[in-house]
Length: 140
Image (cartoon, rainbow, N blue to C red; front, side, top):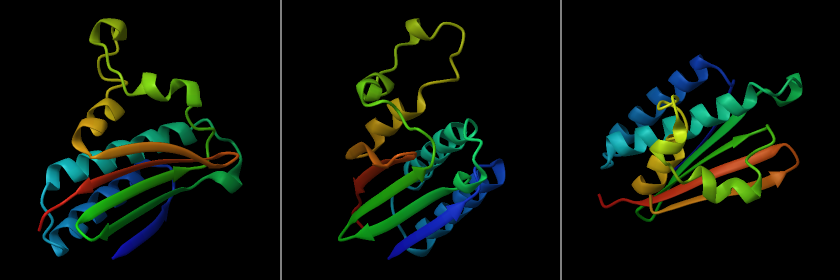
């Protein structure tokens, strides 16, 4: 089953995805409920934060794709911001508490996500279209 949803980059959009993911997991009796919800929540929050810098009203949406294929769940979040520069991809996956200074509540999401999934990747789909995707094997 594949779900594709377009949401506004708002707190309401985040809540909608959170509830939708809980329902998706319940309907399909999937394991790893907390982990899958956390992962998607973090990916959507990052997209919402990236979209705050975008002023073009034509680009004010986020796409969320979820599919379960042969025991692997795949989640992708696509925003219409400028994305993470490729030379910084490895850096955003590294969390060093000493380097964070006073902002302990920032910069940890992708670090935790990468340890909860089997695969995490970044991809530029087009100019101003950035995808963050994850896969996780699930055994039902």
